[in-house]
Length: 333
Figure (cartoon, rainbow, N blue to C red):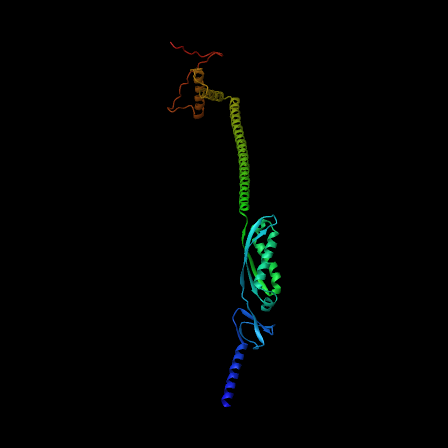
């Protein structure tokens, strides 16, 4: 009897230990376990040590709560301008509510994949090809908003949806390349024409400034020439006035100086004239000598009658010629 009781107690102890172990659940980090009692959801076990009622409750699903990535396979999309392109992408999501992700939708990843592909076709099909190629960020944002709203009842948060590749057909790529080349050639022609226009404008402005400066230079030179002529005329008028005053006071030598000075200037202009080839001398040589004698008389009156030797220098005789006489030129013998 004692041996039978001992065996029964041992068996009972083993059952109790097994039952206790059946009620202990260790949940790993990043996972949540759903608990079902007779097939109905009752609670969620988070990471760490969890307890359930053995033989009454069981683990329904082991849900990964970490952010996961889902590859979106390539698919054909027809754009608004009837261009067919191949598009693929990638989606990132995270389960926030393990119960909803388990019991609100069947095959969560498959559901997210299908709703993502559907909305990619919807969003990209409403856009032109040029918009698809140039506004990829806007496309990603639009798809993310739509898919996130659709997956909210499943306890899922869509974190990112990225379009990886957009591949138009080969003939369409060639047509786009030709269009881009034509557009660049057009811009180059416009820039070249604009450069020529600017060059012509600057050249015209330069010629205008040059003409204005040249005209101002001529104006200034004419003003200077007129001023010089005015001063020269004033000087000549002053000289004429001085000679006239000297003559009025009875000084005959002044008029001799005036006539001799003008006579010498006339000879100088004849000698330096560009069309003067031969100058026959003497031309009224006696008149020239008389003029020089008149100048010497003026000098004597200016510096005194005494010469360097203290005596009076003899006056050179001046020969008078009749009016209208022509000086004789000797003929070669």
